[in-house]
Image (cartoon, rainbow, N blue to C red; front, side, top):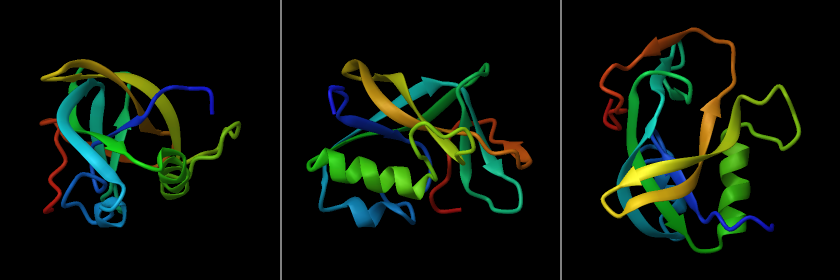
Length: 130
């Protein structure tokens, strides 16, 4: 992979303590809090998070750095239903600038591409306990 991005911005169940995060604990080597422009939603009926990058709000989450990045990215793609070059993905992998206390850092984020009903989370922050 020629791209130099080595970070993934997570905003829901993959945040530290989230129900899907523990499978990446052995690969995660750094976490900083950050935010991206967009809107955060819950997928109605399924109650998992979804981001739309077009929007007026701010989505709060975590910027994760991993060792064995290619393997981790492939696993993220699988979890998020992303296949490069496909148009019917559940989520599409995008590049974003994440605002952190360390400045802006480039990362991948998964943007919802599905057609299900969405319920906006106005705070912009997914409650991993809920």
